[in-house]
Image (cartoon, rainbow, N blue to C red; front, side, top):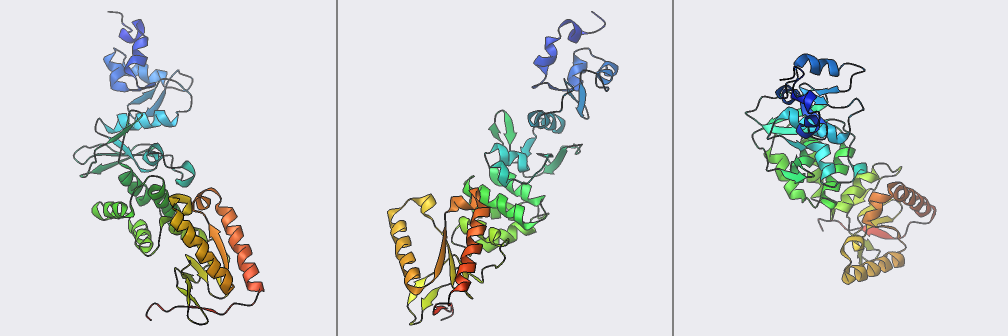
Length: 322
């Protein structure tokens, strides 16, 4: 046998045995390549690079996301699956709604002993879900991937954006997300559980996005979903958000999603009642909250300024206890 081994006689074996140029060092050794040769080829100026412990990338260019994912799965073992932000991306959630995260988060069975390394976060779990395969990559189901991503965040806004995106675009139910948070580890779940609990009082997830967005306003709403009546006590409406000092209403319309004629008719009648009572109203489609949040904020700021410049109309909040 040639001392240089099968890999030298048949260099095509390197690509055949690798996965898109990512290969385990033990696989190279099975092709009669010594550890010294592997090490030498990964030195600066050599043709390869060490991607992870025991994982080699068969070129010297910066690794792509795909190569990093493959390397993470090879490092973590045959039953590993990708979860967290990268899994959410691969399930089709919008990149701009996902928090930046260069790490690859993988789940492995609890009995396996594999440590995190470099850009790979390895989490052992007794609740390893059935994988969802996307482009030959095993992923955690979207509900699990979303909650795993949320557990690693520490501030309200990115958690809220991710939950809204998973519900609206990923069709996850709030109940399923809450169940996953309450069933798995409680580490890092305080913020997402609190947000989902608050949303129980909101009419739709679009309003939840509006509530997150409203925190950036100069003047925040005084009430959410209040009942409004005129000076005679006649019911006017129940806006999604309300500024009581200037009688400004904010409505997140459902027509963008539902396309029901009856919904549209109710919207027209509601806006007529607002106009008759002298209430300033801002209407926002759910899609605007995703595509033009800055424009929505600017419209609300301008409406509040205009409403504060005119006499406040004689309208009142209806007490819920009444």
